[in-house]
Length: 72
Image (cartoon, rainbow, N blue to C red; front, side, top):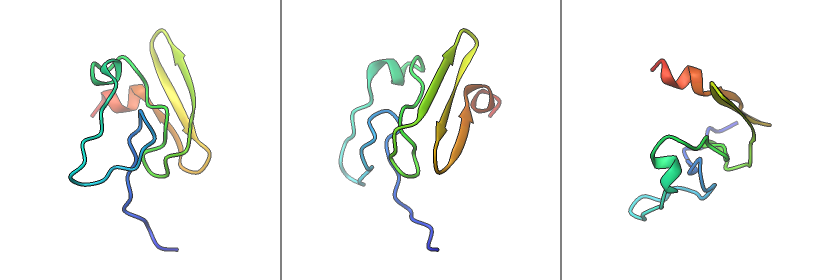
């Protein structure tokens, strides 16, 4: 299976194309909104928000958590 290099905007689900601007919602730019779409395939994710963070699950690529991203 060949690995694709396509990337998708995690807030809009649109494919990222070099040279084309892709608007990011204001709340997402401020870090107030969790991703709603998978960056790898563009599929809509299941998202759970809690007072101390969030997690998002893609049916193909698994779970990402806000706590894991904050440690970077």
